[in-house]
Amino acid sequence: MKGSNSEGLVSLNIRFSDLAYNAGDNVTTTTDGSAVLFDKTPPTVSEETAVPNPTNDNTSSYTFTSNEAGTITYGGSCSSSSNDNISVVGNNTITFNALPDGTYDNCTITVTDNASNPITQSVTSFTIDTTAPTLNEVTKVPTPTSDNTSDYTFSSDEIGTIAYGGSCSSSSNDNISVVGDNTITFNALADGAYSNCKISVTDNATNTSDNLTVSEFTIGATKPALAEVTAVPNPTNDNTSNYTFFSTLSGTIN
Image (cartoon, rainbow, N blue to C red; front, side, top):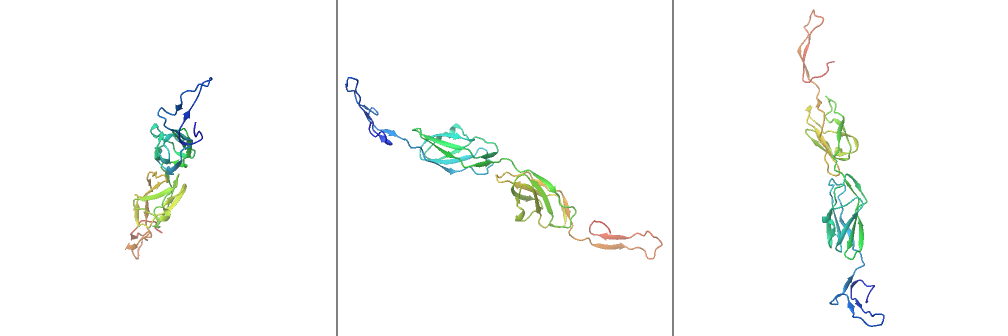
């Protein structure tokens, strides 16, 4: 046999004889004497497109590149359908079978070429999150209030981006939520009653919470204007005299 330690196309020519040293017919690799391909080098595999992290897609796609065709096998928590068991030369996009919410840092892909040489590629860690944040009202806007830039506190069980609805809005300083209590300051509002304000939070995996309805509140930043309507008769013999005045706002009389 020629070139038994070589890799690539190798020609084999075998001569043999029996115990009486009678020479037999030569045997070649095939009937037409063509070469045999020896391959002892595993494929070269690298990550092309990692799973987005975090993602709300629990059947996430992943792309790797290989310089050889072969068979794909999976390790760790990840698996895939039989449609994703064959690799080609170049980019290979596979779809992992559905995974529950959580972080996955043990997934691997092994490509074994047609000469049974395997190579294993680790999948970059990723987190699946399909659950939207949960919001609750903690501290309402005092009502009525003379503060037209009122504070409001709500709780969230996830970090994310805050969005506002209805008549209420806030500055860019109040656009990020944390886990736990979040106190925000509404932009200035005109005097009046507000019952349509809403808040939502979108987490980093783009899951958006249900709208949290802000409890109705009334702003009265303007002082009441008073005017005398009916004075106490002067003089009068009524020592529990009546007096009438006009007010532009309701409130407490001192």
